[in-house]
Length: 376
Image (cartoon, rainbow, N blue to C red; front, top):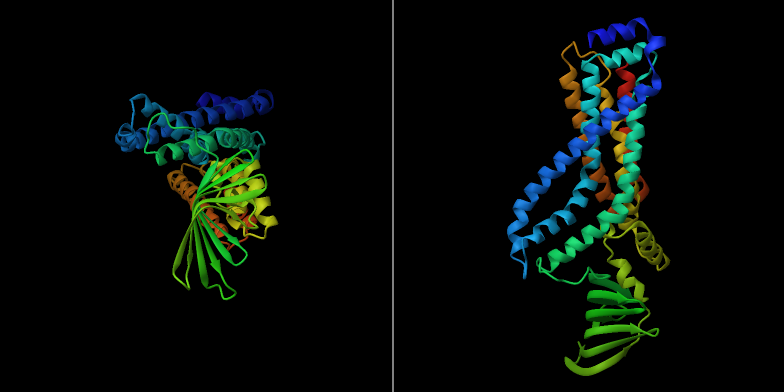
């Protein structure tokens, strides 16, 4: 290393090759990223499997191969969740080692600014962000939906694929309220299970209750089956085999209202938001999660900026470890603040656009500011 420093020090113009240095920085960063990601996911998956293995094997008809199935369904979620944090650790490790070995000094002596040094790491992080986005939209959402469907069936073997359905849906029909235990769609046919309609007057007082075992939407019409009606005033119960259901509720509303944002891809989430907005429903929760589908993978791009504090500054003063701790604290702080703003956006306390993007922008500016302050 001493010879390398002397060599660079005496022949910057002849020896320092920006192109090869970019490749060198990108290579050591991506190697550390892959190693840390594989180690972290393997460790977390092993701990999670130890906690869940007994429950998985207790499922009806379960075999030991189901443990591997659980791993394949759980791992995509862990990878998508921890990818930005792994990028932070890889950035800190890469830049702090370069600092200790005086390679940062060499690059600065060759005329590179702090941001120019970070450029290869950020380029790789951008590539990782794109891969993470595609992976999440094509693999993670499907694996998460299938795993939750499997868990809902107590890890039983040979269950059908996760249906295009939702559970515990409430909708409004004018002044009336309608509750369905589940809603399942098969092409143009929509099936509601355990339907309850609460008929209310102008004062929103319940006057009648209609319960049906199930309801079917077909050929642009609703029909209730195995119906019981209860008159609150007379306390009379009427039983009917079926009943034409006069309602203005569009069938798509049942699916859209109870859609789970992290179990569907972006096009389907957009369709649900458009459907609900057209009917005047509040969509803050879904809008926030839609923006978060962009922010979550892009947060990987933020990590080299936050890790820059560990790279720029003299390590001989004994403050390198302290700066690494500050960097880790900033990384954890981003995830905490980001989750807080997501919750605020979902509850409508903060506009969805601000809730999703403000933490990303604030911590990005903080990373840039720290780099400028620590420039030597």
